[in-house]
Image 1: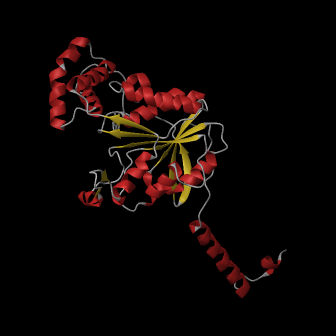
Image 2: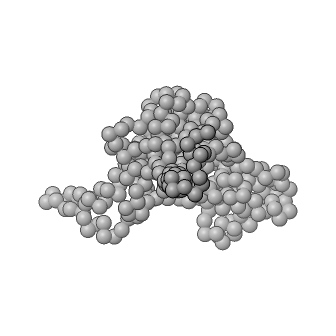
Image 3: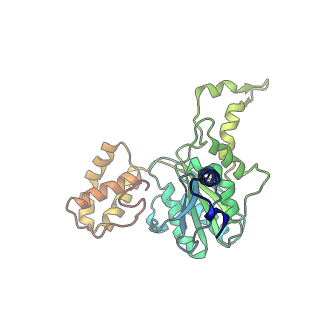
Length: 316
């Protein structure tokens, strides 16, 4: 029998020890916890999250199954991202990538398709929310010794003035004394080219030299400094009417419509886009889903065709 067992439950020493144990339990709950490695064989894609303050890497069990051939009207962007990713998985030099431009034009879908194309060659993706970018150094340290190649995926990235994640990402891309591991790249999508809001007052910092040259002020330099650290920029533009109709037709074929039905859907597709104020790939996918759901022949809903999962259709 130990000394503690021999003590009366009401003894001062026993009460003191109980209070100390309770205090230690509360301290453990608030102290920073280290990031544990997940089962890397469980999935090709992972999400970085904080659960009750503790960092976790969660495998994505049902990742989007979009393929590169499913994406239409973005051939130049597709070719450049594919080439960069191929260099990366083969252990050759490759660049961090910023995909910017019009909403619903395939930025996020292209990254998901590239993952599916190169996952058999060891590519893995970790999705990180911008609020968690301050933890990037810990995440990079965790995967640095792994044989796989990791893409840190930041979707719909933009910052407001003073956000902590901005400085963390900037240092990780280029500027920190600690170099990023050569098995990690960052792929980010954004509707903003420079990732920060641009204010009219920023123009007041421009300087004019005697020979007529114009030099941006410090505020402008700061706002472009982050996007410049991405070695590869891919720009996406609003679709023309013909491009929009081609994407809508692709979806309609998937849902089982024949060519005569697709031709008849041309005018309704244009009206749908007019009502939405956009001819994006996302809008085309939503139109086809609506038409098929209202009685057109349809097969089982796809996991992803040129865009997001059917339940979301967030990005096309």
